[in-house]
Image (cartoon, rainbow, N blue to C red; front, side, top):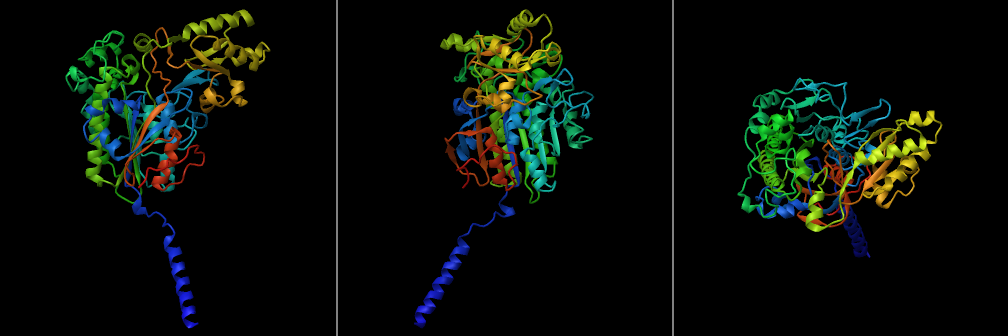
Length: 546
């Protein structure tokens, strides 16, 4: 009997001990990475990595894709694909309908003018005597993952971003960053806004004193390898390739000549030299800022460009595009090597993604593959619509503004003529829907009522913001591209983007399940041990941790 009682007590104690020790421990502060390094590439197709794989070195894309968690099926679903909205979506974890950045530029119905998504005259350029730093993230209506890190750490986490385009830099940095830097195409310098800081740090002024853009622009852009080795691309003189200014499409590219024709440093942004400058600036941030030195995780984002505004002029199968990515591969390797050397391999979390994808040129798809695609002439379509409205309702200025995605109507004029706005919107949508290249057109009043919010209309609902979006929204058929007589645009209808995690606590794996760009924020929040934003619409990507 005594033995039985002892046995019962022993067993009870053993079960109690087992239960206590079996409970998972809360993650310690030591398990957090010293810093996060985000690498974002504008206009990057996921298949670029597969296509150029054999040309890459061992320490750039290959290191990330071989040793990291590769998410193979990630989409950035929004009506208007552009690097401003894409960056905002990636870093807020919500769609444009919530974060408010419907496009890089939209029509301000209150002021009756075009407005740029980061333009803010309440702040001044820091680092140059230009207006390219008169900007802020005020129009971004949601917190970013970096904002949440700052709040959770009571301001102790440090956040920096660097990009060629200010929209990418600002939306990656968020509202509470220590610094957001971008390239000024007027002065050729790296600048910021007084929203973030009042005076450039000494190391930034020293960096600018080197006049990188001017120096690099006097170097011709020549390919890294002999042309014969670019077997993944079309020949350099491919007849349908448009090239710079519709004229220059063959290596070497004389960038200094292009700058004179443009009257600014915009052509420089399209070259590997510009990405090298961004990489060098990132390394200076790591060297000169107090980051990765305490228990609070810091965050640095670098944004590279895929030929910027010339992306569509050359296209995904151009020799220039391949050379761009062979260079980016080297720059990524330089960043990883520098970070691991300073902070220790395995102490840093990396992620690689894109804020937009890229589309094949219409002429290439038509000639080489006989696809039913073409150009949608925006100006001609609006001219026909204008004539129709004048005949139907009287000759007046019914349309206030338009772009390749939406049409804004003159609400005051419609009200003055005692016309029903909803019916007017529907009339416009019905007319636009009849054009050959238009897949679907929808009036704002139907979107606001939530009619048919799924299927091919889903992207409209995820992007529509009352007060910022137009009265008629439309989507072009797959492969079709909008065109203007004089205006050059970056356009894509592609939604698939790359997403790779690498570094601390990340295992080597391939994830085939479907995920969305809004899933990046909740996943990073879990990995960093910070609260998920309240409005976050995404889910945690499973199976990426050890």
